[in-house]
Image (cartoon, rainbow, N blue to C red):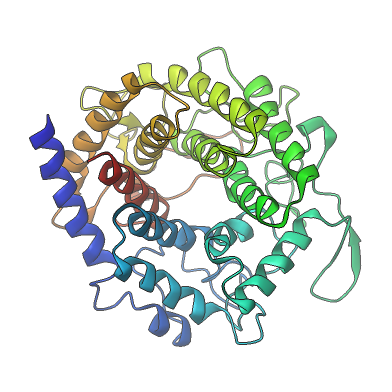
Length: 394
């Protein structure tokens, strides 16, 4: 098994390097300044039609955070340098969100993911610190100003959702508004955890623990999986999407990482929730260790083994063991999944079968064969993170 893992880790490294640090086209300064796109950006969000996210986006954020995780694992500066080049291209010298970065403070959860990466450099760079404080204030203040300068009330959290944020609050209707999306947990809570610990905001720590505990206690379905796009009152998306579940698992380990040595209460909440999650999803593994796009549905030509969700489970399993949240018996299932994924989905054309997106509106929009893409950032990023944990283990 050790030889198999080593071979697949080497294969993964070659792919990751070719997609990022050794790429002839995915050059941070060029992409930002020329209003181009990374090859993994399949949504192509750009001004003026979608004046949010653009390069300040979660699908870029997860790719870059994965590279930082590699740097944290092996100390190779070239991975960190690539991340810094990207961040420096987004932010001007005054520390304001840069021209085409596309951030607006009223869009929704997705706008905050890249901030968790910025916190890695908190206290080392004034322009980063200014951005971080802006983003943190946007999420935690009682009032917010929209881009017209008008003050609007902070109405995008609800006590009925355990204090969690709706997925979107920019004029959206359900399921984005008034509902909690599992990926919204990941987009916001690790950032709040990292920065609240950095600045000593203890009340925010209590809120984070409450939000994560709410999901574990209220969104668990009888089949052992978690409801996505839920209002906590029975109005749930009826489909169990592995990637949605995976975002939640990643949030648990990333929050736990912040508080492992400083807050036993939060760490315990994360550990209990993570074990509950993993014991629920592990029985759904397929023969090659991967997970289907719709976790609990039969495998078909349209409901395939899917790369992004599988990567997320691998990352959360290995990181959970490393942090002491799970025992070592969870390592082997993770390695089986990683190897199965590398052997069946990592081809000469790239990382395949990453499902593009789904609306979580109650319809089955999870089985469109055209939406199984290659090198999509929402899958490439978690795959890089999963590799970083394999690297640590090796």
